[in-house]
Length: 395
Ligand SMILES: *[C@@H]1O[C@H](CO)[C@@H](O)[C@H](O)[C@H]1NC(C)=O
Image 1 (cartoon, rainbow, N blue to C red):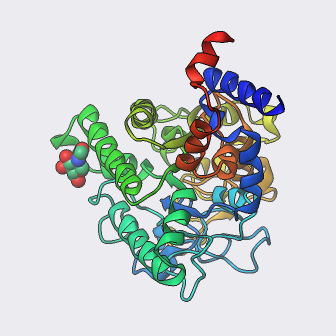
Image 2: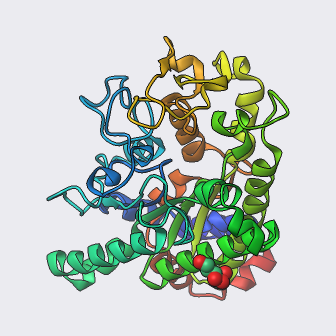
Image 3: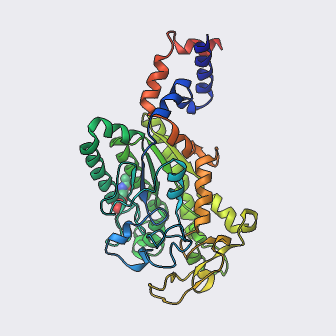
């Protein structure tokens, strides 16, 4: 009877929520005996943990000098574009994982995951070409890790690790800022709609490619209101306002990608995802910083010129003079393009814990703690002797 009850319970959950896969009691025992999911990270400076320290690039694409990382969590600057940690560091912590090493860090342990991200990178290979590790190359690097894993732990176990891992992707801002708005040639060749379509098309292909390689669980950080980044606000001839053209591209991208993800979920068996609404979340903090524990939502803590919008933090770039605020935790923005650790921390918590419509359809906690999707469905189907549909109608 107890079995039947829990089975009926499961059916009710399944009819009301696609989250049913992980809710069967036998599944939770199962998940305890498994090690935590690995964590593979792709993207740009929002999540780079130091890959660009190892490539030949310009100071704008690096953050391995002071005052980056000044808050003391790390002993020295690591290459993170923040005063301390970035969002994936917090997520790794919540998932009981160690800090995930950059792919290019020599002799790093790849068994709990790898960070492939590169500051300045875009979805399109044309974006900052030659100065970054573009998304296509990041996926090639993942392929290398996947092969190495097979050699190390055996093909069978490697396949399990790949299937249970969470793939986090945060990229696209550079395609719209430098790649399009800062690139008259691109603007001449493509309308904003066509360009968004191209970025979305390539991003979709990347997700499909990771799925074909065995990835099933995907997390996405959507694009920020790009026109409100201090660097872009400072460029606006309408003084004090966010640069509308940039924010509009980000919104169009986010809307298009939300639809793509909903379709992929229908088209790809076992594909599960967590998408966030970073745009509105961050915009609320920019407009009303004091409501959320900040005092400054517009000006960068580190930089120069109006709104700290001149990208000079660290003094290694074109403009060598810069100022640094006293209380970084009061600020939404760390430098001209990047938010503070406090923002990364708060948003990591939201992605981990929130419920729809803040994160859809799942939060990251669910992705990390649910077990192998395929096996779980098989278990649910195997569980009863009777036809499950019959029971559903009897209820
Ligand atoms: C991917 O981007 C390239 C430009 O780099 C473009 O020519 C191509 O059409 C895009 N692919 C898709 C599927 O949109």
